[in-house]
Length: 110
Image (tube, rainbow, N blue to C red; front, side, top):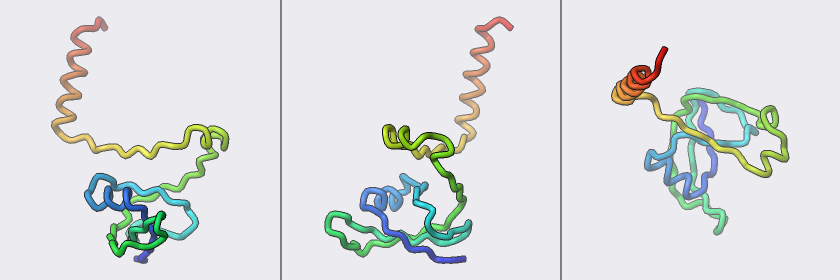
């Protein structure tokens, strides 16, 4: 297990601290593996100084991608990329999905 320190902008730092964000996107210019500790140090790019706030999170999963395998550089520059975090399907969500699916089949002829 390795500790890896990275600077993090205030908005993203706060979202991670509050539990609103649990995905972090980084340039893959360093070694990291599942189980490592990612130490996030809040950094203010306007003042070019660290704020002193630090949080640590365990790396759960890693996926390394080269975006140009999927899109051209021009597309990436024009549109950017979304990082989409998906919620797990809870039992109530699953039950609601089953009800909607059943209703759809009731109204369609098979």
